[in-house]
Length: 103
Image (tube, rainbow, N blue to C red; front, side, top):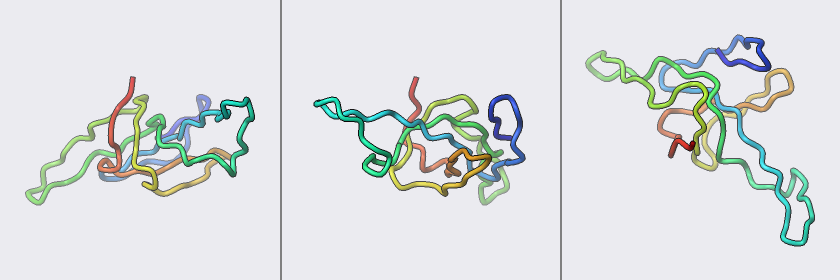
């Protein structure tokens, strides 16, 4: 289940899906101007909040997810489904949308 400030959200990803909180980085130009949200690019980095059990193969075996809650990941630019829970923007991504894990 996805957590937010210690409280649990009733959102549990299924299959090879995960819940990710995008990391918003403040963007400032070289001249010191802070860009408004409408001028910013979509974030491609986020924190994994919850993961599903993994994908089932054709022979019925479960392939575990490669990431776990707490991991920071980089994902494809227009991947996933955006959702809003308790005024917080979250993404539901498939395991295949994750490109890398960061430290």
